[in-house]
Amino acid sequence: MQNPDLRSTFLFQKAILESPISSDEKVRILLEAITGWLNDSSESVFAPPKKTHSTVRDLPTYSPKDVEKHELNDKEVGSLFYMVKQLTGNDLTQSDTNMYLGFYEDLGLSIDVIGVLLHYCVSRGKRARNYIKTVAFSWADMGIDTVEAAELYISLFNNEYRQIHRALGISGRDPIDAEINYMNRWLMEMDMPIDVIKLACEKTIMQIANANFKYVDKILESWHSEKITSVEEIKALEESYYDELKEQHKKGHFNGKLKKGKVTKFQNFKGHEWNYEELEAKERELQNRKLGMVSK
Image 1 (cartoon, rainbow, N blue to C red):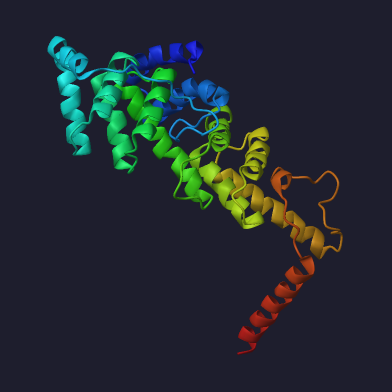
Image 2: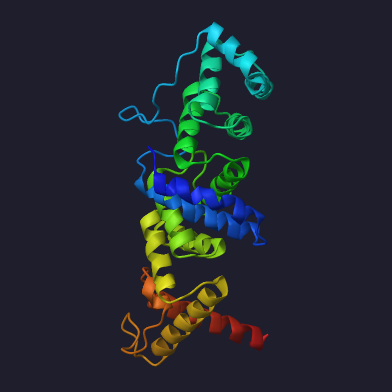
């Protein structure tokens, strides 16, 4: 679907790319530009269309004479077909020439952008014509019409999204739309560093043994509300939290919760109930071991 507001955001990409800001910042800005489209779209940018709702409309049909005429009138068309043959390693069928000429003529994608798109799909083993067409329509709808924008988008998709997936133990598939929306919220709206997001993912797996994006979101929302932006801050809060628990436990005041007025930031995202009898037994065991070492 067309999104004029989003398309306009891509018009400033050249200024961004030519600015002295870091690559990470450029990716963040690009993410901010495309988030509106991702939030509104019901289709994944890199996923095949669902059977119940295809986002791919028909491309124009070109006869062999039409193709020949385009090649004669526009040398770029011949270069396009040669590039596709080189990237795929196959001779082009009539269906192939129709599709790629449609990308160029109807969707308005440049030969260089089509090259980036095709290389991305082929490198991932996604050679099906319908898959490639879906990506082309998505890029055209988002206004990705330069090599720089295409490469930045792919970088985002391959890096941040993949890192988060790996932290949650997910592999072998692309992120679905709901997951992308969560990840965009963490990366863009909350502006959380990737290492903080990965830590929240790891804690989710440790707590519930499930790649639950909603659970990760609750953890990150808690940290964000307390303006926590680094792994070091989180570790410091954890130490403070457990020191307070142990202190109350030793004094015999612990009833499963911190004393009133002693709530810490770290407590906000705690969801695990600890067995403090077991903790006390382990402390006694440790003390006995130390005594045994002293007696020796």
